[in-house]
Image (cartoon, rainbow, N blue to C red):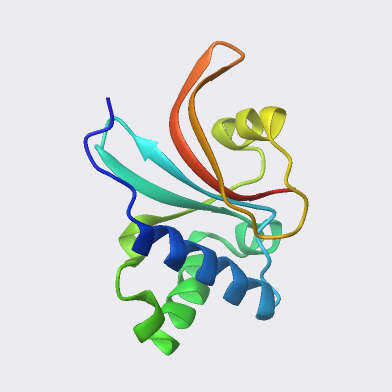
Amino acid sequence: MVAMDLTKELIDAGARLVEKLDKHGLAPDAAFWLYSAEEQAWKLLLVEVALAKKGPKAAYSEVQKILAKDGKEFLHLRLEDLVIEKPNAPIVELIRKAVRTGPRVSGLRFKNNVIDGTLVEDAYIYRVA
């Protein structure tokens, strides 16, 4: 059972961040909020080959620059809410098997779905290319 709601403010901030990453040449191949039952929190997963190649520290630094520059737009979004993930991460591969949005930024709720025997409790998908 999901203990914390994914607010409209977080959904909107996530969409704006994906759009900003696109404009800065760091377009995520996949971007989605995922509920972590272990942490009882939502995490915004950003999957991008170029960021992943730079290493986690550099990738988070790039995202932090965008968040800091446009701080008023991201009042509800903290760096701690984000996870830079590799394209071959198990959860990314699972979501990719079930959903493909193409390159645009969409908004798709993906709740209580089982993919290859793994439960995806709750997710909000912007992009899975």
